[in-house]
Image (tube, rainbow, N blue to C red; front, side, top):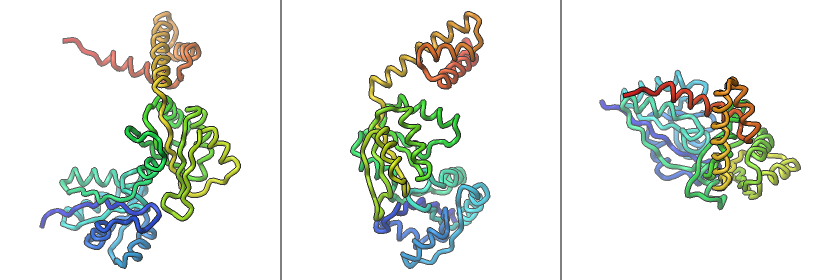
Length: 288
């Protein structure tokens, strides 16, 4: 008996009519369905008049359940991985299981379906030739600031997911970091109360101060203009050069970074990381 197959099956993000014919067929043919939440996926299978063995596969049990599923597929079983909505492994469980299957020689087959990020990008009317996907921004302060620092000079359209209870704080942080950028806010995609708003980030902050955020949100944010990205790069180059001068004059790296950031307007944390990277690179150089 040969190995089985892992199918990454895209499911609707709201409207059940978005499920593809192929997805229905695969769900009906596989030996087991691995679901982020068996209750949610159980309702989908019931809607399709399908009865299948189900196991849970989610963020909290993936390290144990992943190897178990791999062993079942090595014995010849086929498995469909589904999440509560959208494509598995895209800001949802699945990446690690796909990796385990590749390592074990098990075929990994995508069954395309709805993806909130792509739907919102198409809906936004913002540049879609080049874009980046951030998923959910970090909630801890230090990594969150680091990501916002990167996005400040990012020229591509950026897509961010956010939950309703964190939307206001995220919009405030984005407005502070990115300024008057345009943003398209898609809410409850494909569902009854679907909504798409286009405004600037400060305008979005003001709007949601008086409107209670409800549902799941996708933020499609305009990229940095070329001149803004270049000026940020110029500031960083100036700050690095000044930091090197100050450390050569005897200041500690921390003190030099602090002074250089204040004089040039560069972000202190970003400058410090850049200096550490330069030092690491220099220490790692070897001669011929």
